[in-house]
Image 1 (cartoon, helix red, strand yellow):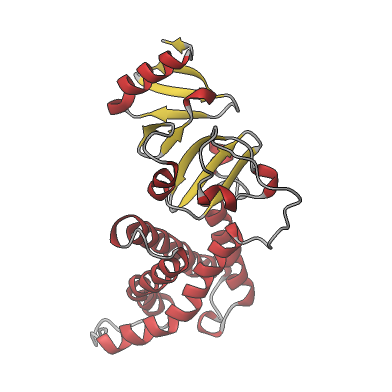
Image 2 (cartoon, rainbow, N blue to C red):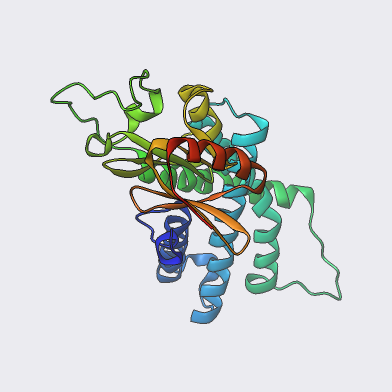
Length: 271
């Protein structure tokens, strides 16, 4: 995936977060809430830009920590909500500091410091709207109105039972499964009918496929070997090119296994 594709808000979660951050910052600057009334345009952009982008970064980091390490089996909505609450708590000191710096400057001669009560109040003010924003951003990415299927979904994995996560793909993208890629706390699913981004853990998806299905080529990528068009080595790096044109990296520790498997499948190798 090229850099422009990675920044495309319609294709990637990072691109979507960047666009959402810019949009939220512009909204706050336009509305100019009472706490920042009277600040210059540049100050408004800086004030709200720091708040919004810092929160999104903290929420994403908290989401990864919760989904991959603290509670990997938790309900996705619960994990998203927990990430929003945790991120707002982490943001509270920064938000309070920005208030003191730009909105209500502190007299350093007096040495007026913070209290735990002030931090708690700041967090309580931030947590509800910030968590709702995080829930809303995630919902926009994967919630779709139910669609009635005109015919049963085909079996997508060469005769194996269809994993649950494949049933969550849009009807127009339910082709044969080609590859999976972890994209933060989302899962990019490539099929013969296109690719989709769904809220799903990468490890859980591999468990649904089973240990004998396909080939894990990287900690963040899985492929069906029958859809690999070429294995290439360039500049000390190894990649696979899929039939849909997507190029995925092969981890250094998996090069031997991947090469042996793909050569056995008849995939060409280019040094």
